[in-house]
Amino acid sequence: MFGLVPLWWISGLFYFGWPLFGTLLLLIMMIRGRIPLPAGSGIWLAFLALVVASATQLPGPSSLLTFGLRLAFYLTALIVCCYVYSVARERASLTVVLGPLCAFFVALVVLGWLGVLMPRFSMTTPFEVLLPGGLAGNPFIRDMVHAEATEYSARSLNPIYRPSAPFAYTNTFGSTYAITLPAVVACLLLGVRGPARTVLLVALPMSLPPAFLTLNRGMFLSLGVGLAVLGVRAAIRGNLRVLASMLGVLVIGGLATLFIPIGDLIDQRVSSSNTNVDRMSLYLEVLRWVQRSPLLGFGTPVQVDTVSADAPLGTQGQVWTVLFSHGVPALICFVGWFVLVAAVCWRASSAAAQWLSVVPLIALVQLPFYGLVNQNLTAVFFVSAVALVAVERERRGVALTAPPVPAAPRPVLGGVR
Figure: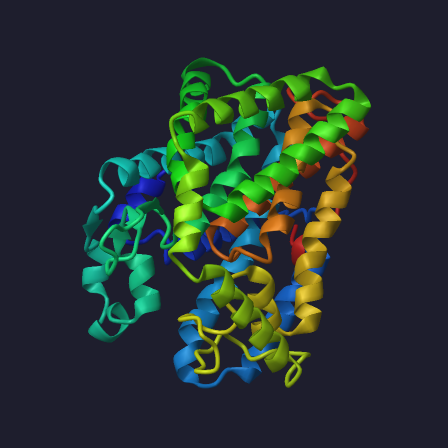
């Protein structure tokens, strides 16, 4: 699921195959006989129930596919969280548990460099060929099944190529990069050995050019907030290891800016587009519409002619997607999960656990600007599951690289044993 991302991307199955992997993980856990629920699962299940209820507001059968796919991603995130949480509680070392996510990060770096070196790379995937003509011609579906290395304006005489592979949009690349970077640093701090350590040490600096060239302001903002909070906590607690690791990341990032004029590129992009104005017009229109259906929303984003932006209402940020599509109570539950998990993980004390615990906060900062519904949402739940286990171990005085002490039984999903 996480380790063969380039294969799923080039085959066109990266998006549609993701929920299938989630279903397989659920079957594995049910056969195994016990599914422990990590903190926040109750509030997420309430959110899922509200999403299902909002299906009654869908404008027609044509919206069922996108609604079902979005719901499948929400479910997959929880399934992955439970699976990783269960595995992390049983494994001696958390570096093994973080391995698939680190492989995911390396795939981002490799495909990001594809976008840097071959910005116009594009191919029709095998899965795209197999789709019926009506589906393949749908712009939303095509974005998910067609392989393109970058996102750019084909109409521009001087286009800005922003790495996006394996995702449909460059903002998702930037969002996922900010979410997975702390997990890679944590894995190194946990003492991962052998070739894996070498690969990660090379991948970290190599990741900066494609990440910077996405020009994702939300990525920089969320990472900046995460690192600032991490630094303040480390300074207060006198955790020199956290400060040293954070300083290393900042130095590498600073060196990259000597070769990549990131500020000038962002200014060029902003001056040549109406992104800020378009987003604000969408947000204001969502607030007006939601007053008509505050409890269940409208089921899915809709295209209207009352805004200047060429995007449906309920897009350009997960907060607006949930609010418009599923209503105010669903938004409270959705945001509540991140707040609750961030609060539980706040107790982290070791260097690695503190890096992991900052991910829910990074995701919180992204919610108003980025869509957190696809693989990036699953990545947040993955890291959060490991962070929760790390906090549990620290509370019991168990080293993160030592065999865990058997914990007291926790609630199980559906009473399955």
